[in-house]
Amino acid sequence: MAQVNLTLNEQEILQVFTGERNDVLKFLLERILNEILKAESEEQLGAAKHERSETRVDYRNGTRERELTTRIGKITLQVPRHRTEPFHTMIFDSYSRSEASLIATMIQMVIAGVSTRKVSKVIETLCGESYSKSMVSELCKRLDEDIQRFRQQPLEELDAPFLMVDATYFKTRENHRIVSKAFMVALAIRGNGHREVVGFNVYDTENDYCWKQFLMDLKGRGLQSVNVIISDAHKSIRKAIAEVYPDTAWQRCQVHLVRNILNETPPKYKEGLKTELREMFDAEDLPKARKKRDEIIDDYGPVAEKAMEILDEGFEDAMTVMMLPKYIRIALRTTNILERLNRELKRRSDVIQIFPNTGSVLRLMGAVAMAYSEEQSAVQSLFSGQKYDEIRVTIKDESREIARRQVALLKAA
Image (cartoon, rainbow, N blue to C red; front, side, top):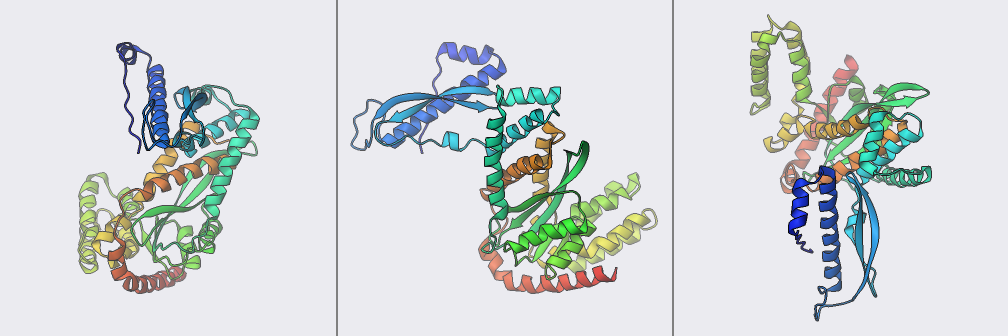
């Protein structure tokens, strides 16, 4: 890998400390990227400038200017040219897909006639120039193709015993009205402990039909052998799991359950109850957790009757992960991994506030989800594949038995 050294003279250092923030950032970014280009060129040529070397494979042929639009404005790069083989750089290839999608969505808002003063300022900050409709259309087209390809990729070869699903709402303009659209997303945890986003789509709401269609799409693409699905207690999610994945156990997110319980608890008892609930969820095994649950219900029943009803009704579904070893269950007892993606989605949508159409929601939020999935592939695995292989058969049988009980209870309700 090429190494980069950045040297500043006295005047440039003074400029860094005294100049306007954006100007300084642009200056530093331009210098750093140009140094990277030089280093990449040296690596590809096999020799530094004016260096005689047996490893040299080509010669320099000047440079060409190329402008790059960034968040902090437009910068000019000096792209090296080679005599024989063309120069290749990762800088332009790595131009962020989610960044490009944000720009595209913002400009769409302006073209659609729904711009605001705030949006205009964001566009100016991000782009530093105006964009033509044809340029926006071409950019959106490339993004749409990437997203469509991602959403249609086959999943037959994916070993994903665990799946997290959730939905986040975004405001969108539709038929001269502002409506909320549900952005549904699914994150798979592989048998080797790595996680990745495997599906997302935009729906009008979270009803039975939409959740069923979302899960059927995943199954239709080949995602078959799922042992546990983790989610909140939305009724439509539960029904969809029972219909599409009847042999898959459902794990109710413990964080959501605690939140539901505390919402029905008098303020002065919340902290104490929260501590005891944590002890219950951290129990070594299911019998000990049930014993702790009974103690909590006895202690808090007289002062928080409704809260204890929620605990009693939701306990078993929130303890599905107790069939797993502790080193696996901790990461899978909540949807926290997916909540981090939801926070990133919300952070991006806060800039836009109201999307111009459903397509722009899918475009931007989809690009963010894809980028998040790529980041997760580089994160340390939740558990090792070797350890999971030791319990794979046992977990499959246990999850099926739990799923049958859950489906039966759901039908009887």
